Structures are given as structure tokens and as C-alpha cells.
Image: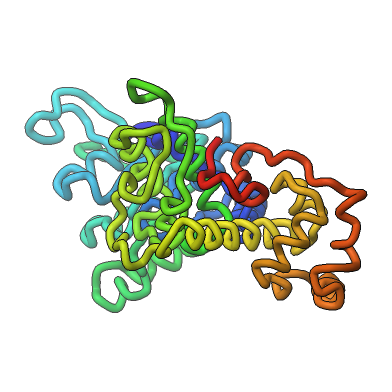
Length: 364
């Protein structure tokens, strides 16, 4: 029993469409007092979502009490939730309030509720219905007032079919449902998250600080499916910072499974072009395919970005009218002809691979 055991380095950051939708939904859900069921794969940040909901709610001044239903022995979880009186059982030397009472006026977060023992589920359902708790060894119920936040990576509907979860409890907690997106669905968030973790862990090692990721490392991260999601990415970057010999993290230092040499580009030019294409595409998507803001983020002029798009044959990533202009220009006229009057600015940190062919790394 206690406050959420969230790694302070693990944050709910990102600017992808799925994460922006999630954050907007969190704001709406926080206004209610109804139960919330947070669903998502391991490592996506379900506990962070619970904390964000609580911090934005009218119960924020109260405690957020977290219980991991899969981490407590079945023989102990009833006492953890309900509390007990002195001498209620062997070893109970003093009275102890349970998590239901500890969350009074605040919220109770039941993490991995799909792992709650089947025998205890009717008792939880009764508490949610009656808002009364009876400690082990006591005869008088105690009124409780808390908001329930629950999370699971388990398919609860399948668990009902398998006889591992009660259907009536499912419908009691399945009021407001949030789905936390996996990292593989948050394409443009991957690199910013990796660089954020790199800044956090960069001071953890002796010697010169790590400056960034090489193109082959970026390609390896983009190819990886990240079954462990953001937590796996965080651990991967932390491990690479410790183990890398130089100031740049390469694919080998990341140690991702399936990162075979045959999967990588054959030479540096191919690696640079592949990375450049992915970066330009992600930046255009981030800015709604608009050239001007994408060029500003990449640290190049509009003319230079037009040239890059033409060279990489990315006209299909532009709005139809921009693509038509580019195709009509044929790389020689129209917006591209303004190069003499619109020189490219110097590249900014983290975008050298787009504007300067002599650079082969991206860093901070």
C-alpha cells in the first residue's frame, strides 16, 4: 500500500496523434468521479495515466493509493485491501487500515486488476457497490469514499470466458475506458523519447558524455517493434549509455534483437539516405505536411527542403497542391528557383544529417 511506484525518469511525453488524443481524453475523464479502466500493453505507462487523471481531478488533494494486484501473494492481498484488527490472525500484532480506507477522499489505483484472485473479486464488487469496508477480525463496517482507477494488460473479456474474471465486476469497473497506445503506434515520438532518455542518463557514466545516436542506431530503433514499449526503450538507452565505448551510440550498443547486418543499409550513403527520408517524413507528418514549419524544425530553408523532398522522391508526402508545384518545377523552377534569394541557414543540432551531406550522425 502506498503512493504509485513510478520511475521518475519514465514520463508520459510525446506529440504523436495517439498520445495527444490520450492526453485530451485524460482531461475529460478527470472531471468525472466514475471508475476508470486503463488498458494497454506492459510498459506503455498505464500508472502514469492513473496519476495524471488523479492530479487533474477534484480529488487531487487526497492520496493516490496504488496496489499491484499481481505482485502480492493471494494470502496477503485481502489484508492489504481491507486491513485488519489486532490479533485478527497470527502475526497481526496491531490494527492496520487497508488500501480502501487509506484512499479515503482520494483515489485507489488497482494495477493489474486482471490478476486479482477470483475468490476476492466478489468482496471488491461489494465494496464498490456499498462503499463499506469491514476489516479482517472486525464486525462493524467502515464507510469509504474513493475513486477507483484500475489498469490491466489482460483482455478481461477473454478472462471472463476463461473463468478468471467475474462478469459483474467487469461491468462495474468498465465505465470510462482509456487505451494507452503502444510505442510502435507512436512513430514520431520514438526519436524524441530516445533523446530525452539519453539526456537523462548521459551523466551516469565516466568519461566524455554521449552526444547522440548514429544513423544505423536510429534505423535499428525504427525497425524494432518494442514489445516492452516505452519502458523497454528507456532501459535500452540507459544500457547503451553505459556500454558504448565512444561518444556516439551505434546499433551494436543498443543490442536490439534481430539487428542483423543484412538488415542494415549496405554502406554509409544508403544509411544516410534512409535516415534522412524517415526524418523528413516524420517532420512533415508532425506539421500536417506543411513545408514552412517542417523546414524551421529541421533547420533548413523552404527551398532546401523542397530540394530534399524532390531528391528523395517524397512528393507524395506533401499536400496535393505542393506536390503539383514540385512536379511541375521538375527540381529547377518554381519554389526551387528562389535559392539565390533564399540561402539555407546553418543546420541546428539534431538535424545535421538533413542539411549537410558531410554529417553522418544525429545528436543533441
